[in-house]
Length: 207
Image (tube, rainbow, N blue to C red; front, side, top):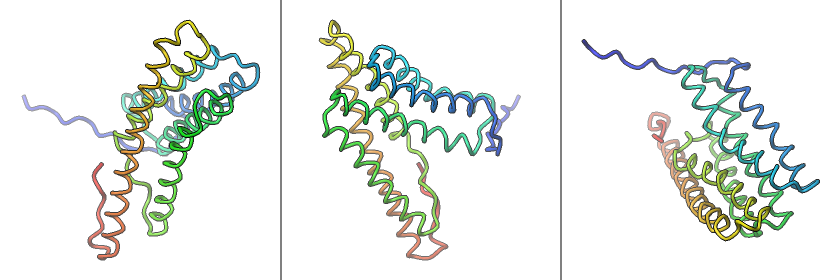
């Protein structure tokens, strides 16, 4: 018996899908997290909200692929929710002095560099480069490191192991984050070079 090919996953224009609902719920967790962290300073509750927001990062994508319900809105919401969580966490952690300014600056500088690259691509008629697994892994690790770092601050009795663990993950995440940025910049340079050589030379760059 010949093996049947796996069904392809098509991108739809649907808005109200289960993955999109998960992404919307993730977005609602951002202001709740900031309130808990900066308002009453309920750090343990903030850790729970942040951990749920980070662990569900892969849930919406998994459900979308599993249920064949990938949508264009979902492709935008998922990375937007990731970046919003990271930005909100950096702002809150920096204001509370949970993380140093240099870490915040290193992560924000990466976003600025990629933002400029994206503007250049759009000026030449290109969309954003495909998401690379290195960047996705860095984002996941960063979202995993933040709750551990905050938990070490909130519960001093576990600081001896939680703080090294959280910062170890954060260092790896920072390295992967910038490694992904270098890959995106290489893709951008290749597209711009192909554009200068003529439209027939331009082709999508494999991720």
